[in-house]
Length: 256
Image (cartoon, rainbow, N blue to C red; front, side, top):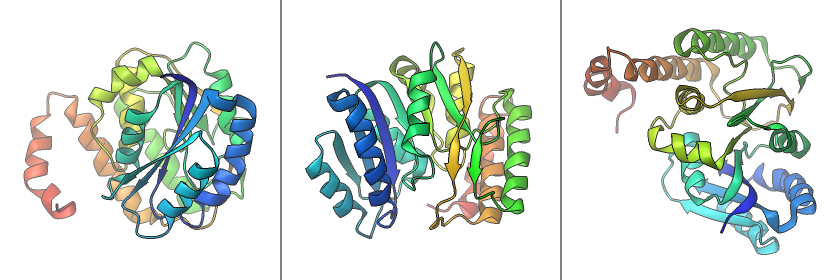
C-alpha cells in the first residue's frame, strides 16, 4: 500500500536525541498529513535505549514504524534499509538529531515540483544556520564540496546535508546502483540520480547544530576523501584500481 510521504530516520545510539526530534516531527507531520504519511525509524547497531524509545513512540502513533538491524551498518546502510520499507510516493530522509526542523523538512516535500530529488542546503543564499559551525568544519565542508563538483560534475552546494527527498520513481531507478554506505553515501546517491538523467534541485534550509555529535572532523575528512575518489574510479576506465585498493590498502584502513 502506498502513502503520500515517507520519512526515513537512521538512528544509531540516539537515545538522547531521537525522542526530542520525534516530539517535534510527529505532531507536525501527523497533524498535517494524517495517515497519508509515515516515519520509518531504522535502529541499527545500537547498544543504548534507542530501540526502546523508538518503539515507545510507535506505540503512540500508527504512522511510526520501527525496523531494527542488530549490526552497525552506517548511515547509508540504514537509509537504504529504510528505502526498502518506505511506501511513500515521495520518500525523504533526515538525521535523528533534529538539526533540521520539521517545517524545513516539509518544505522539501512541498517544493520538489518536477525534480527527481531535492536537497536541503546550508550554503545557499537564504539558509539559516545557528550557531555558526566552527571554522575547521566549514573549511573541510567547502573543500569537500569543491572536490565533489570537480570529480562528479554535479553543481550542488551541500551534498552532505542530512535532509533530502526523492520521488518513488527515482528511488527505484537508483537503488540498485547504490553501494557505498559510509561517508560517500550522500555523494553516491546524488551522483547516481544525476548520472541517470534526473533533475536535482536545492532549497535553502534552516539548520541548527545539536549537541551530541560524535564526528571526528579530521578522521571523517580523510575517510570522505578516500570514499569519493574510490566512487569516482568505479565509474572510470581505472576501475581496476578500486579492486587493487580493496585487496591491499583498503583491508588495513577498513578491516572486516
